[in-house]
Image (cartoon, rainbow, N blue to C red; front, side):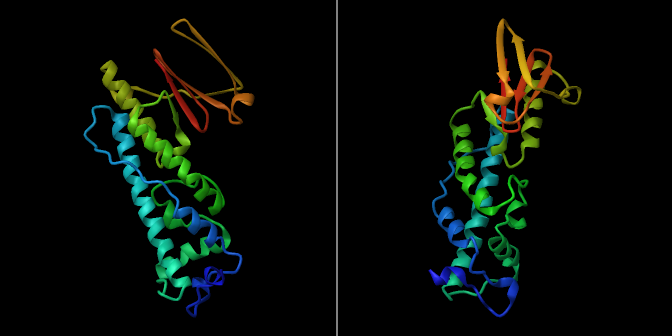
Amino acid sequence: PELFTRVTIGTQNLTLTPDSVFPIVWASVQKLPKLPDTHKNHVSPVDTFVHFEVEGYKRLLEKVQSDMGVVQRASKGEAVPPQTLQGVIQGLNYDQVPKAWLSLTFPSCICLTQWIKDLPTKLQTISSYVLERPGVYNVASFLRPDRFFEAVKHQYARKHFKEVDSIHLEIQVRKYCFIIHKYIVICYNCLTAWPQYFYLFKKENWIWCFSFQFFKIFI
């Protein structure tokens, strides 16, 4: 509709262009799934991390839905978008993720349309971690993957009565990963299984193997 291609209030920075991706993003925002309720009183540091990830995604969704709601009302002439939405409207015009939406995370892709397309999958993944702790974590679904690795280190330290500062992650990039652990031999072909190379982390009797997207713990 023509209303979805024009938000004009007298300044070029607050105007949606005809080729804006607003209709695509607005349709996707309306279909985003809801996140489950969580609590932070967990014994496991990893479970506590997942709780804060859920809370972070809830704040992100609230921000995205609020901003898009204002732009949608402005497209109908029912509201005047404030100057604070300048970055959002520019992002819609140039198919770029607004910086305001990335304040809680990191850029995971270049274009806004792909970012909003991937968001439901990330929300579903995080929701599944609330219901059950998996054996494989999709690191790309996290807002703050760096905090995930810190949580893993704390959980390992508690289990083995070690100082967290004494635990370090050793990184090796390998084309083929042959892992022998507790009489289990696992072979990964990193070029056929996943397009990314795997990182191999090893600390005493833990072997952690993950790509840029997946993290698996073998105990």
